[in-house]
Length: 537
Image (spheres, rainbow, N blue to C red):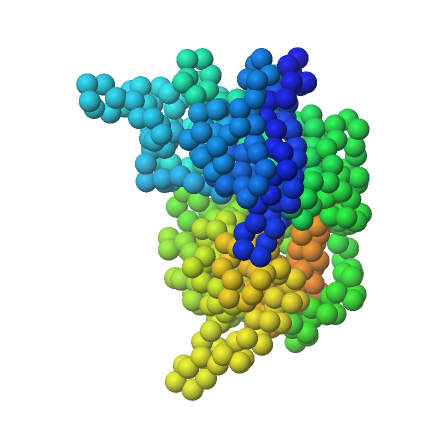
């Protein structure tokens, strides 16, 4: 924390905000000091993002005030719901979900708010220089003149973060406070570490960072203080040095939870919950240990090289590796989303056509992708149709007519069993918290017809309580006989859930680890095998 960190920079006082029947914020008061990294913690739906957006002027509070203070301690109330007023006062926000123009270059994206010109024409040289100053602080390897859409999700997130880091010297509206909403959710370990270093340096220079993250390690590594919200209410503010992780989790969810234990070869999960889900998920007809998913020679130009793996019924196989190693690309190809993919995929011994997702779905493959907003959910359809859309034709009656009663029965059962919190079955996914959106997506694919479950970062951007629920659902799916292929960048999660781990590096399988060899060190060795080989050469 900087020397000025005891001085309050911004204060939210008695802030309340309601969305329909949902009380997102209820009389919340919290202050943020100059030069500190201040964490906002809580379950999904606790009000963290709503508070951050209210501070940044994206939401107009129903009551309460937000005040920003100058160096002399003189306060000025920010105009409610005014992005321009907040921006002019130096308040920024970096959203969790990517909000960019992928068809434009990196430089164009970073200069959209203030395009440099010369003689009435766009000054592309000045644009590239400004973008390079911002982006290369985080990642020198990003080409600012390349189309943004060609970058990996991790690097696109870095560009979005860089957009808030305007030059502090000479800028007309220099940033004083930045809200980081899950800034490392799609970053590799190296990228996340770089961002944390930059965050600390910015705070040392006097910039205030409001840091929203579900990654406990980051909170204790980078933050000075932490404020917990629960059900829209203020619970507590503590200094990081005076609180431990179990206490912080208890403040967030109102109870203590145990960290996930590694899944043993004969572990049947929590018997009660597994039995409750078995009827919904099915799987009694699947022989445990039978090869359910077989992938041979899967390749795609520039993405995958001769990837082969097998997942048995009742088994969870993790895929380890760094961002860009080919993990998500492997799942995309198996699900028929890569038209250039070659090789073979079979389910239960029957070959699957990879030309489109139609055949994989018919074969019993379900896919929870990394980006639920772009790839997973239909935000203009209700919760009910989001669950039904891949299987509507199977439920339909004569001549393809929809059977409303049967559909409602299935949707009601899934929403109840998977604990999706929603006002109604017709609510839009955008009305749900991130954790409930994720459970909705998982509920879509967990059923009697799903033999293979592909999971790409299934707990990305969700709180510790919901994460625990998702872990139980994944284990229950395997207990019921499904073959689960899991991608996760969180090492503890990958190690806790997996029976085996296949590690990828530069688009190929670099090795496989069984229970006795499954450690973070061994995963990282295999994940960087190509780089180590080049250094050795």
